[in-house]
Length: 180
Image 1 (cartoon, rainbow, N blue to C red):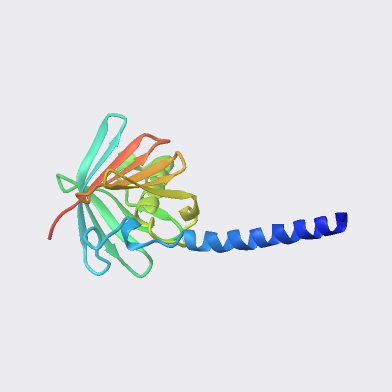
Image 2: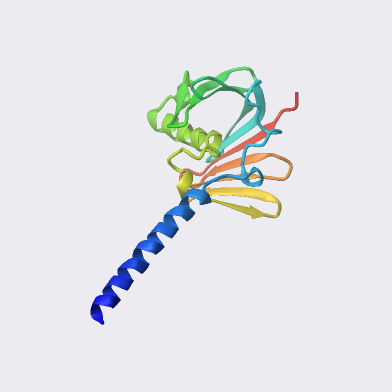
């Protein structure tokens, strides 16, 4: 009797493991209604322009972000309202990197934080990125909210404005698409 109990327990255990692994593969496929980047927000062929605001502990950088898809990933630049370039960036499926930063932002920890935030923002719909399995997607009052544990969250409101909150560093990024 004990032999049959052990064998049936093992069979039950292995079948439950097989069933769960099948569920995990389909749980991370993104449907059209829970994707962050819609056709209205980002064009893969043409130049995208966004009005941007970055708030950090009482300091505020506002300006325009220009973004274009290239062979290696998303390339962009952030320019303030006076036409001064704050930084350039490139976001690939594996990482984000800041280039040509202005002097006040040219510190490794600032560059790494902003590059990580931009990577989370622009590669959020890519199912192959490392953080994808750690994110949760919910809908609250018509807004799509994507959270990465208690570190970062992105909110896409019904008017297609985006807000990225870096909860750990208390940085808020706001993006609004500039119509063509």
